[in-house]
Structures are given as C-alpha cells and as structure tokens.
Image (cartoon, rainbow, N blue to C red; front, side, top):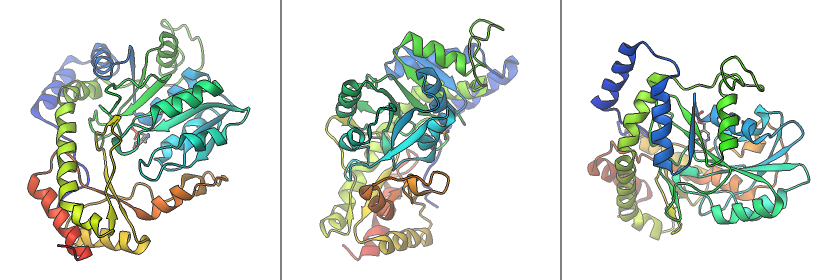
Length: 364
Ligand SMILES: Cc1ncc(COP(=O)(O)O)c(C=O)c1O
C-alpha cells in the first residue's frame, strides 16, 4: 500500500518523549517553551505560542486580534473546515470568497469585493504548502485597515520571497500527523507583535497573566510537554522532509508531463515568489467528476492512496448554508486529486503512482 500520508518518527523523537515521561512534567513546562523558541527561530517570527492543535491556534488568533460578535472575517471557500469555523469561535461571521484556479489560493480581487463596513480580518490560507499572494492580500488589508491571519497549517517551512515570516499580524501552524512536521496533535500562533503574543499566551491559558490573575476570557489550549518533545526533534528534520517532498513533486512533474500534454490532467503550478513545501501534490482532472472519481478508484485497486481536498465549497455545507458566488471553487471541488507525496516515499513508489495514472489515461 502506498499511503497518502505518513508521519516521519525516528528514535530521536521516541527518546525525547521517553525523557519527558521520566521527568514527570507531562503538561505545559520548560520543554514547551524550548519548542516555542526553536519554532520562532525556525519560522523567523519574534514569538511562537504553542497550542493543542491548529484549530485552537486559529481560535486563539481571533481572540488575540480582538475579533468578536458582529464582525465579519473573509476566508477562502476552498480550504479545510477549521479555517471557516475560525470566525465562529468568537461569534463572528465567515464571509466566503473564491480562489485562483492555478494557485488554489484566495483571490485578492475576491477579498476586496467581499469587504463591508463590518469586515475586520482576512484569514488567508497557504493551501497544499504554497503561500497565498501575500503582497496582494497585505495591500488590500492595509488599504482597508484589516487584520491578516495566515492559515499556514499546511505550509510549515514555506516561504514567500525567501522568508518564512510573511509580515502579517499573525500566522498559525498545525502539527497534525499528516502535516509536514508533527507533534501528534499540536499547533502554534506566530507573530512579531508583543501585544498579540501576550494576548495569545493569556487566551490559551484561561485568560491568565501572572498566576491566578485572570485578565480576560480564555481557554485551556496549552500544548503538552510530550507533544513539544516530538516537535523539537521534528523541527531539526523538517527541512529534510520538505526537500524530499519537493524532490517527489519534481519526479511527478517529469513522469506525468505526457499526461498533462494530452490535456487529461493539469499539474500543480509553482509561483516563483514562493518556496512550495508540497503538503499535497494536487492534480486537476480536466474532464469532470467522472474521470477524477474513476481515477481515484483505479488507484485504490492498485493499493495507492489519494485524497480529495476538498469535495465541496464550504459555504454550501449545511453547517454554514451561506451565500457565496464561487465558481472556481465549485469547479475545483470536482477536479482535484492529491497524490502521495510524503517523505517516506521511494523513487520507485512515485514511479508506481505515475505509471498507474498513465495506464488509467492510456498515455505512454
Ligand atoms: C488549512 C487548515 N487549517 C486548519 C487546520 C486545523 O489544524 P488541526 O487539525 O491541527 O486542528 C488544518 C488541518 O487539517 C488545515 O489543513
């Protein structure tokens, strides 16, 4: 079986976790702070605030930015549901906008068109591991006086113009086991702002400043020492993981070029301003739903995993039942198929997947 994702756990992570278990300090402690320092240094931000997962990091970001009931937050219609739920955690309303068909990322023009007097923030997603158009989104935000959160859950190590720090108000990461680096479950808020970092730290710890001085409202979103121990070791290896993902993507690009040339599929594109870390390698099947779903089934028969991220425009889900005009998203939901790209794949595995796709489309 060639799986769609695989966490890369070595003896180093195992040894660190055992060390923490022996220390007796299992919950928040110095090792979480060590992880935060390593993560801030790796990501190029002044502060990293570790949380229980990416979803709670998104929630924390809203609280830290002061987003509240009655506010609107613009988000892409084509992303994981946690992004869309983000405004709802603080009683605000998500406003769904369309994405660009090539980059899969939120369109700055669509964001601009969705802004109302109630709009307070944009949550822009770096989908599949490639940064959104940071310059364009930050320009709209500056003009309209909006906050920007980067949902970089899928983009650990990704760069925009050679930097992991995109210059927004804050960014969030997820360390779920399928992500480019893992802590089991985990997340973080990254920021250069002392104020946002302080509010995020308080919110993830019951609104507590110094002990038992509850300055504001809060939650328990603290990362455990066990998770941080895994994360410290993963951060030492994440660049190697991302190099392997990029190598696999290059191999797919070469092997699948003849299928793309016959216009059966479209390969993922790289924006030259970005360092794409290929959380997913996502092709578009050009001839509608039937081919995409049939290809997925064909791969399954050959013990090859694949994924559909995402099958429906978020605004159309019953939980939102919102209004939005997002034709690009609607089409992408029928076309996208993500192939195995994780660092555990061998060259032979990538070749096996590409050969199966060629066989399905009858292309040599
Ligand atoms: C774009 C995006 N945002 C947020 C999340 C939420 O992260 P977590 O699963 O760690 O809560 C994910 C994770 O799947 C994601 O892909």
